[in-house]
Each structure stands twice: as structure tokens, then as C-alpha cells.
Image (cartoon, rainbow, N blue to C red):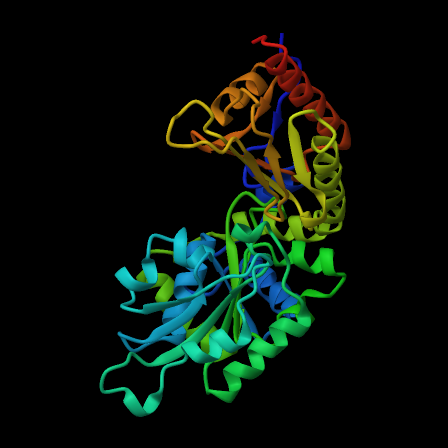
Amino acid sequence: MVTRTIDLRSDTVTKPTETMRLAMAKAEVDDDVLIYDPTARHLETEMARITGKEAALFVPSGTMGNLISVLVHCEIRGSEVILGNNSHIHIYENGGISTIGGVHPRPVKNNEDGTMDINLIESAIRNPDFEICYPKTRLICLENSHANSGGRVLSVDYTDQVGELAKKHNLKLHIDGARIFNASVALGVPVHRLVQAADSVSVCLSKGLGAPVGSVIVGTKSFIDRARILRKTLGGGMRQVGILCAAALVALQENVGKLGNDHKNAKTLAEGLNKIKGLKADVASVETNIVSISIGPFFYSFNAHDKILIWFFEQVYFEILEGSNITALKLGKIMEEHGILLMPDSSSRVRIVIHHQVSASDVQYTLSCIKQAMTGVENGGN
């Protein structure tokens, strides 16, 4: 009989705390489309302060926040944005910058640490003397932390270099900072310094911070004025949104300080996985809080490589060594029987994410169950 549930599917699955629910119930509200909601104004003012920017705007999602930011910077259709070939904007946001904004992506190879080589970024900038043929480069996008590179964090020095390059060529710099607070804690650098070189930043409130809904975009006052109009155009203008913003304010007050513990639990999990027979974890790559596991597939003739990849979105990579008779789907089902919820991305990959509602005890229980599953498979059991 399952006596506990440990939800490791994502850091987006967290439930509002009692403090959040109370704040939501008591939130002072008004019409935010008319810019009258006082709780929304409070949140936006606080986020502008934290990020060191002039103004901020609450939006329903990070995808909308990134889309609005790109479209403000690239008002002319056919403009071009330089971004990582493995970035969230390029891969996971439905191609919105192109389908909705008519913005052309110019992907540059992401390195394993999430960076793009400065020289490759510069060489991707179109020659303005040949705009009779080329789209016009207007924007560079970075992602910090970088999810598909294992949640690796971009340093202040690197971000400053990209910012200097953007200014040199009269371009804008946008940072997809969905987990910028995780990056800040991991680097020991204040958020405002980490994004100082950026013209705009999107920050998710409902991932590691644990709020139930929303993101905030920040930038200059003129940038936010234009962003507000686009938010309405895209259907993101909401009325008494202070109910949601109240929970986000609690998240900022209560959960930023817990991120370091999430990272510690992620490291502990990686180290524990590395000790389980049949698994190999790249502990050194764990910088923050998410674990994605890619497995096998082991029983198909087209794939002879039996491995499992775990990324810690802020991620760690681990391998199920060749010869281990288990798949992601099978591992997920075994874990569910123990009350542990994982997220199979496909037949060969499962993602595990640490958040503030996962304790050190939960991590040890998860390791125990995975070890039991692997031992049973190795011994020919179920």
C-alpha cells in the first residue's frame, strides 16, 4: 500500500502553500488591464527592483513572456534573432516567434554548458550592407539556466561579453530566465547583476519558486509599455490578476531561500544514483535542481546503445550501463507503484525534478526504490 506520494515530474507541479492560499484569498484586486490592480503593481515593482530594471509586467506564462519580448525587440516582420540551437525558445515554444511574429530564427550551436561561442554569435550577425538579400539581425537571446544543456548556468562574465557584442552591433539582448533565481543561487550572484547586460528578461514564477501561475518580463519603461499592448493582443490581459500575483509575492519571500537546498538534494540524488549498480551519473555537471532520465531503448534492434540520460534542469546526466534490462517506461511504472511520480518524455527518457516540496528524506526513499528496481532487474525479477 502506497503511504506517500513524491511528485518528481517537474518543478511546475508544486501545490500552493497555505501561506499562498491565504494571501490569494485576501488579495486586494482591481482591473489589471486598466492597470489598476494594486497587488499586480506590487509584484511588478518588486520584480523590477530585484532584476535592476525600470519596469515589469506579469504575464500568464514564460512562453508568452519570451514571445512578447522578441516581438517588442523585432517589431518589423522579417527581422532575425540569434539564439541557441538547443534553446527553449527555439525548440519548445511552438515556433511562435515565426508563426505569430514573422521573426526569423538564426540558430547558433549551444555548447555543453549552454553557452554559444562569442565568435560564432558575431559571425551569425548579418552584414547590413547586403540587406537586399539578408534579414536584419535585431536581437540575441540567451537562456539562464540552460535547460537542454543540463540546467547549466551562464556566468556574469559570459553574459557581459554577449551584452558588449550586442551593443557593438546595435542589437538588443534578451535573457530567457525561466530559472534565473536557480542560476543566481548556484553562482552566488544577485539576479540584478546576472542580468545587468540584458535589455529584457523573462522570469518564471511557477517553476522553482513554486507559485501556481505566471511569469514576469522586465525591461525599460518604454519596453514594458509596448509589451503591455502585445500582452492584450495575445489574449494575456487578465482582470483581477492580483489573486495570482499574491501567491507569487509569497513565493519570492519564502522560496528563493530554499533553492540552495533543492540543488543540494539534486546533488545527493546524483551521487546516490552513481552508487547503484548499472547506473553511472555525471555528478560534476549538477548545478541546480532537475533530473531528466533518458533510457535505452534496450529491446529494439535499431538501438544498440543501452543508456539512460538524466539531466538536472539544472540537471545531471546518468547512464544505465549496457546490458541493464530496463527501460524508462518500465522504471516509471515501478516507481509509481512506490508512490513516486516521474515524467516519461518518450519511450526512452524520464525526467526527474527536485523542488521545494521534495525533502532530503524523499530523495533517500527515491534512491532506495530505484536501487530496488535495478537490483530486481539485474537478478531477473520484476
